[in-house]
Image (tube, rainbow, N blue to C red; front, side, top):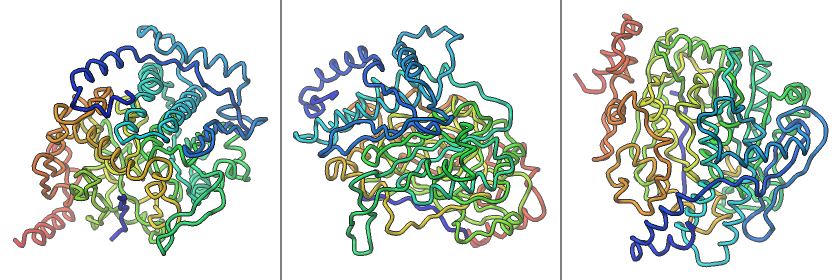
Length: 556
């Protein structure tokens, strides 16, 4: 049985959040006015920077203590994503400052560049933590924290996103792959990127988008065996070390590795990091997302794309929780079927707010097929898709500080937009699930906010996901404040299939919080909507397995 990836958690609109029900009517009027007049002004605070090899570094200081600012620790030669002059960066600022006034019908507006996206994120993070620091010394609560995040996102990210959706880079049909990696103080990051290139069939077609969240000063370790933390050295600069290496230098100089550097204190969680990373995409044919502690099989890139091509769907996504790196022999694994995720539960802890937790990957199949088998869920640690999904199902910037919930909402949104999810035919990526005593996001986030605030903000934000999935307790007329739902339609379900049909297909009842088994997944058969391709899986071997499994499960 493959090891699983188990996610673990610990446990404004300014001051008027604290007014709450007492001034509900006035609040709603003020909110409506605020949302109407909020317009992006990116001319304020954009940094004109460039770095060696093209790395754009955001280093926002800790809220408590130091001044907040951008850490420009480089400058100089080399090609890359940010290899621009200050005049060019000034032109980018002028272009971005007119985002809110862009003619929506102007089809000749140039595509948004990676440099422009990085400039927006730099400005956003700087302004966000400037405002959070301003609240640090006063009496504040989680509503205020969420309110500040909401306001800065409405001002900085939402107009950018709306502009970006109309002016995305043109997808190239050159078989290139964009590899999205979100890294949080990860000592395995360099090895992950190195292996990705070293074991790629076509390394010159591989492009990496790295969001590197590191501690650069006054660092603390992860939680040690005694439950304590201790001072530690600054984290290794994954991007710089790779770009200085023999294998990395030519790829960085060819602009195949793009980076957004964020200091630890500015981290907004893995999902928001993946949102940032998705905007480092620059027209590659295929999109692939992994974690920064991954290993790879020989020619993993070619194998991943080939599985997409063989999947019986116009819009396939290949995904699963990869097996543990220490347990997998890729040469042997190539001959056997990959483990598949079939089950999920409603989380029972207070702070997880009954959000859906995906179950482990299990070895349901005896025989490897050349055709990928259908699956109900997408895993964040390995999924591959046609890059057009970035336009159809864009990452949502209104989900900060969450850890659970990103996979179920991405799964449901993809499926309702017409995408079909498949498990890999065989495993091509491994995952390092155990990093004992190493820094984890959920262990350190509260050092940079207020004690207990992170969990409360997460519970509030999760209402956005639960609303889209059909949880009655997260309906719009129940949850306060209503800013939880700002622009939710931009990042909601598709109109190809109904979300109710998705939840039924995957065996989840968000009203009663009940779960039932998905026999179609366990037996390797297509779900009801894809019965027209059942013949691809109806082999003598599969009929035997179906009968054996149903006998075991039900005692028939």
